[in-house]
Length: 175
Image (cartoon, rainbow, N blue to C red; front, side):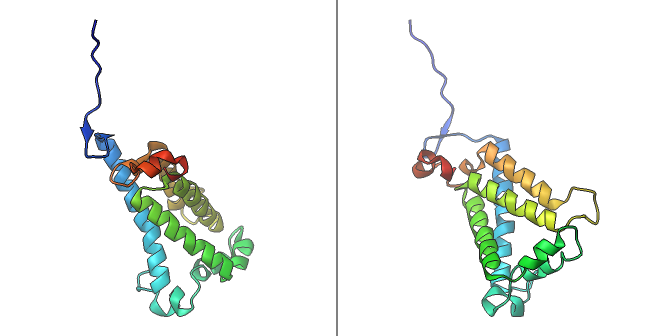
């Protein structure tokens, strides 16, 4: 007796299942948050005048961490964070994080790694601002961190991203 098998609807040459509307929502959220990280890197590097004036750009000798970290001096953990401001290793680690997390999320490759490192970065930035001015514990850093975790759990790199590439599918750490 023959059996009937129901295969998912396929699209494209990659042989991936058709995506649902919720997968597109997660993909757009991934790209949007990736752009936030990537834009922060670009503006701090080149000083395009949005958050960073040209004379304080990283390529002009400015420190991308000094403004934020020096401003935390009066906060609960401010002494710790203010002491890190302007140190070259902190600047390089921060900028590498912004670039790596931003590119990974925009491209849809390494979304899990980006979610973990992005969450760590956001939680550290949240801790540097304690106590919060407008809420006892919740701010945009925590909301973004929750969304990053959701992106990783949803496998959001496969929709509108390069997460379906064979090399990504074969290497779990690239998902």
